[in-house]
Image 1 (cartoon, rainbow, N blue to C red):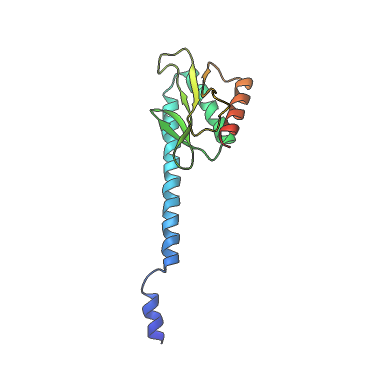
Image 2: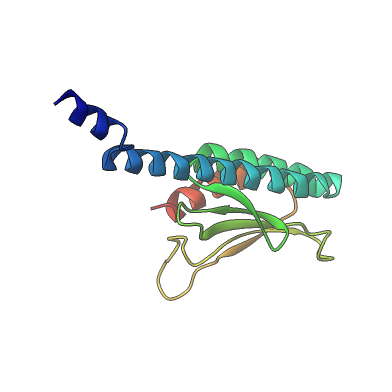
Length: 145
């Protein structure tokens, strides 16, 4: 009998242990991807003009505190924030990069902003004042429902 136990013990990990290790590997991979996404986002923000960078940095802080479940990433070279399944919920576009007189903060179709037959999905940002911040927090809260 002792020989039998030794044979089973040396056979390797149980199915439950293997499943737990696979789960942990996926968690580590997801954490690394999230960290790399935020790093890439912050690198793109650092390349922006001082005015656009200030807006993007403040917007990043607002989104992280209001919707911590979103993952920062880049999308078409601009800051974006994705749901747990990787779909972009909202994004920021530098005005200077596209020769516009304003930056844009917008939402994709996964955002729950529906309001009747027509509703806004993108917003011009010339500055990020207290009123604009309140609106963004309200929009993010609604979008995440």
